[in-house]
Length: 286
Ligand SMILES: [Zn+2]
Image (tube, rainbow, N blue to C red; front, side, top):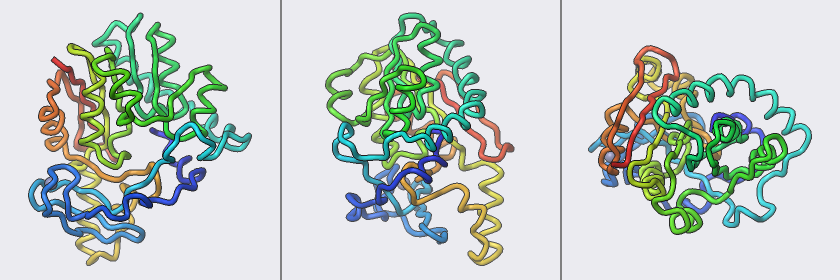
């Protein structure tokens, strides 16, 4: 979901409504009740788990209960122009993702599911390669855009819905979770849901920002050295708004989670030094 800035502009869902009872001392990764506030930001608090050191913020967001109703802003001309203007920058990254997928899988006739499909560009690129493409996108503006621009019908139901879990169990050759893992409310559950719809021998391509990288470390030092006054660097990593970053993984935490879920990591790409750098994992359900 690389279009997160648009989400901030366009989305009017009140964050965290149906999750107001969630106890943030419960770690969203290891489920122990050992998390506590570590960084107080202007609009949210970063919790850290004493057991596994997972970092997540004290906000969740709610999606419309019926993705087919009129909830969510429809695509108007202004939104359309905005999304269109952001496509070229996204396309560069998405074409790199496509090359990575193609290095592992022959796409012609392959059943692919792009979770967090955004404006549908990656689904479109997969379809151009001959893949049979399904895509999940909870925000209506992006679904409308994908339909109008690419003729692709994205589905608004999230991966935990019976539509996917029962209707597509063990079905897909390829599932992609690009720039999604940091946005969802419960990433471990999302990963399990993704596992469920992949067929034996199928592939998962996952990328997400890496927390144990230089820029985050500098942000933490800046916060500590200023006694919490200078939170501006850390603010850039998290947001309480719907569809923005709710948590960040270290490379070790991510590897441990995918392996615990049952995936075999085939390859990974990561760098400590780039700002907002990504970890890219290629995983297989063997
Ligand atoms: Zn934990």
